[in-house]
Amino acid sequence: MNLTPRQIVAELDRYIVGQEEAKKCVAIALRNRYRRQKLDKDLRDEVLPKNIIMIGPTGVGKTEIARRLARLVGAPFLKVEATRFTEVGYVGRDVESMIRELVENAVRMVKIEKRAEVETQASKLAEKRLLDLLVPRSGKDRGGRSPWEVIFGGASGTAADTAVDEGNTAEQRAILREKLRRQELEDMMVEVEVEDTASPGFVVGGLGLEELGMNLQDMLGSFLPKRKRKRLVTVAEARRILIQQEADKLIDMDEVTAIAVQRVEQDGIIFLDEIDKIAGREKGTGPDVSREGVQRDILPIVEGTTVQTKYGPVKTDHILFIAAGAFHVAKPSDLIPELQGRFPIRVELKSLTKEDFRRILTEPRNSLLRQYKALLAVDGVEVQFTDDAIAEIADIAYTVNNQGEDIGARRLHTILEKVLQELLFQAPDVAGGKVMVDAAYVRQQLGDILQQKDLQSYIL
Image (cartoon, rainbow, N blue to C red):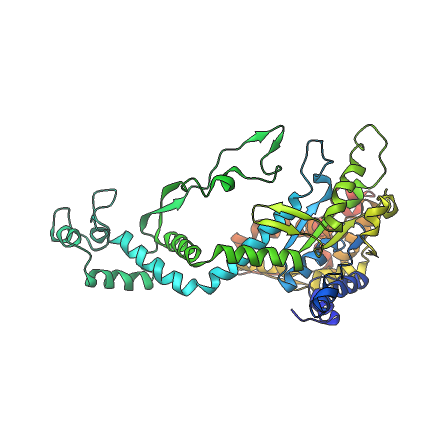
């Protein structure tokens, strides 16, 4: 997608308040990918992504910036915590699994796109299969009565049975087809055959096969027939299942795999959270023993290497890595020098102010106030928040963060839950009402909590 840095920041502004410097950094990194694609091939391969470290407390927008950036351009994206990995030789996840998961995400993305392209054709094929289920050539369902008989009535052994048993006539299929298209048979039960995806779990030396990078079913899939099982579902559910099955038949999986791997290699984004938890030099004993080892295992992935996946080798040279951490105790300089050098761009995200909290409540397209208004509207309750109520909520969130642990915008979730708890509970019983939430209402709902010195004891 050909977006300028200014356009990228404008899109991010629709969901994330403040943090202008961080937005500019990721916007430039994204634009550089577009610029790189326009270079000559020889130079293009030499231009590597400038990975980013975001420094700041939790809840200020680090993860949301990376996630929205990936959605903006439809890039394969993976959020992973650095603490889930461990040094080779210790029990834990292999660092290369992040690349395998990213490829899986990309394959799912491409499959969804390809299914959409063939949806019309798949729907027609699924309709034919659904008609065969409703009017089977045997003329009998599991209960001994034909679906035709169930729909139109008649007893076993009547002319209806004879008509079905002699073959599905064009007239019968035409009637059923019209009923299907008018969705008159949505609740009727039919039996469909689906793949049995359940597979036994294997453990080898304390690690699952997933950690070894291989799945037994994938290894033997080309040699063993796929297991099938029958499910009794409604016509509505059967239609969805059959459309997906027919779409998968029309999709070229080799093409899907090739596109997915290319997207990962050229456009993939990995958000490596909690990187500060693995910062620190090895001391030889205790729980910190593998911190530096994890960094050294992550290093080649970030530097650029080839990882073997079930879809083939994947190069990581041009994947964009965005690391993040609060760095309350450790510092970025506590990372090993080699890893520091692979994250040349460092940006500090600021703690949220009262004004930031106020804007977070009202400005983003997915703001919390809009979410609560929509939720209560389902029960027929219209809620309005006055300006002084919004200011009061923002002030409380800011105060609690200052007095206790600073968890950023996440503080607003628990405050709003406490403020609206009674209303959310009573809403179904007072459908059709209108509620005005002002500063007095906020203080009333929080009650004595506001009088306490240690607000964090009452508001998480």
